[in-house]
Length: 407
Ligand SMILES: *[C@@H]1O[C@H](CO)[C@@H](O)[C@H](O)[C@H]1NC(C)=O
Ligand SMILES: *[C@@H]1O[C@H](CO)[C@@H](O)[C@H](O)[C@H]1NC(C)=O
Ligand SMILES: *[C@@H]1O[C@H](CO)[C@@H](O)[C@H](O)[C@H]1NC(C)=O
Image (cartoon, rainbow, N blue to C red):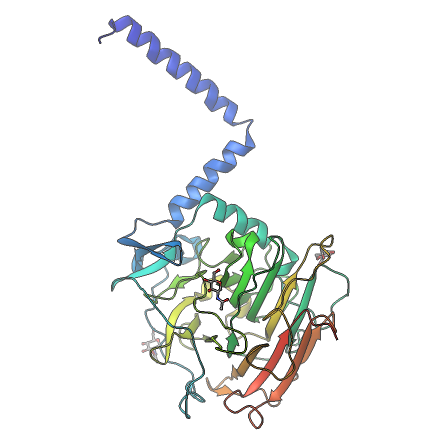
């Protein structure tokens, strides 16, 4: 069918007019503007993939390693991609060389050479990440916490107020659990945090596993990372949900579901990882034992992100953190969701705790002041065993934590 030219013209004009009106209306519709902003962020984050695959139900994109979202960060325009750290800390293989290895997570799929995997980000992911970041839960913990907040702890920390203390890295092996009976607003984390301090414009990096429906939209046990360069005032980011973190591993994926996880009393699976500062580039590297070989580089957080962590970090925290809205009576599960004294197969552990010193050497925290922060004892337990080697061979310095535990 053919319209006479004047009808076409009228239709076009009407289109322009109505479109123009809509355009003007946008100024008065913050919701729509927010949508546009989210679309813009998604376009930056989701690079055109070389290929995609599904892993445990997630859509994973394999992206050119040189074109990953990190390089869109304004501070990283000149950043030169590091494929490997210039060196690794001395003593990195300390315990694993002895005898049999700790159980660790198996790896399954990966991306082709030259590409790295990212979980495809949706608009809902962005909104959830923003909300999750605003929670008190995302912050490091003072040595003595006020009781009766909605966030609870079962962790150890080095002194939080000693900027003269220099720490160049830390390592742990932390067992991984499902927590199936959480409600959607509850959060559970098992983590290692390393930072410059806990107040003001601190810099910090956190890695571990979590059950966090508010962040992921499901109740699966997943890995997560979180960084900030200014105490979560203007910067801060989970996983790779905003530019910053640089991925180098072809297989480990930030935010992926943990598979397998520990079957209590039967099979223990653990995340065994290290975060340390490259003495040459000052980038902060994440290495993880992914099962088949020794530790491999997963990725790093560029030094540009951390004004307060250029030379070293000053504080390390590790263990469990949970939150439950104040109006919810049932406590969230921490660790394995229970605490069985001395039972490494039913209670979550953070073992083989090590730090890195100024000689770029791993050491055990024998002489460190490690303060246990357990603000609801009787419900959430945290027992720092110190050197557990004698009674529990191959565990080294260990924290056992979890709950709820009713005495
Ligand atoms: C450290 O960096 C310099 C300059 O970038 C480089 O020449 C040197 O080889 C690096 N050292 C190591 C141990 O990689
Ligand atoms: C969050 O932290 C702020 C300050 O640190 C505190 O005033 C507030 O009560 C906390 N909120 C909750 C729900 O605990
Ligand atoms: C953990 O949860 C996942 C997802 O629901 C499930 O596939 C898996 O079998 C569970 N594993 C254990 C040990 O409970």
